[in-house]
Image 1 (tube, rainbow, N blue to C red):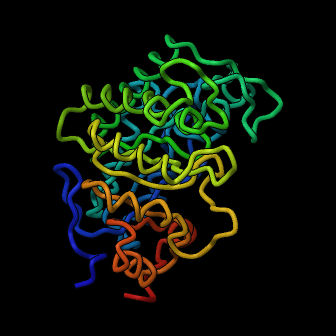
Image 2: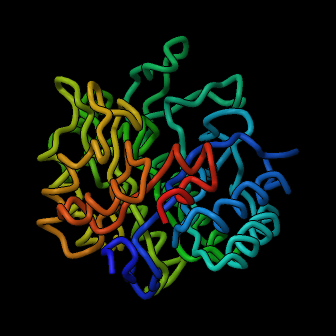
Length: 328
């Protein structure tokens, strides 16, 4: 049997294979940013035909302050839970497990979308949001956002999801704290060390664990490298992942940092393997690699080469739920 189609365990959850649909924004939210039938139909079709064992749904904002774009789904209040229950039920009916990704956009948020001034680790404009100078977050605001993440994770569990993924990648708030380019703080959340630059994330993990219990899988999607001078490095990524493992993360999902989900000058299958290989060699929890994979054979080859424990297929599934039919 191919390694790709062998079972794998994340905390107490057993998946029947190692193939994952990673989060990709659809902007299909309805009124009040709720889950719609269109959202459910989109995920049901991919659960039914894509040969995956796990879907990680697109990022949901934990508070209106952190809304990234119009059409993004909200998990900021308890009245959102019923819509997510419809979503998890339709995915489970197809025999697939599902995690929810929860997120705060930080300085990437626009006041025209959120109705609030953007905030971040430092008063430095985001490259996608240069017209508004964000406010540097106080310690009190950091602790408040930690609570928002924990309450969002509680809602995730109550809605029937099988796990939660904390979004610390692609230039959003937690990734901004991890990047020395955008984190110029001098306090315990500052840029002096990887330990400081991941303190916010680790406090969120601990708060989420208190809300969801020991058995509920927690994934961390880490933008481990900025691929830019002065940014986070692969060495930083490895150190961060070891810290996340120590604080109770169950799955490490590696991708780009402030550069987003692409890697400059690379398009080969598994183009973030420069991060995933050293991490896999130095942690005991599963490592998920996404980026550039468009076929079953490519995913199998990456597992055979020990690049990761699980493989995510993104754009190919986004474009076509039947993407794997030609191979198997």
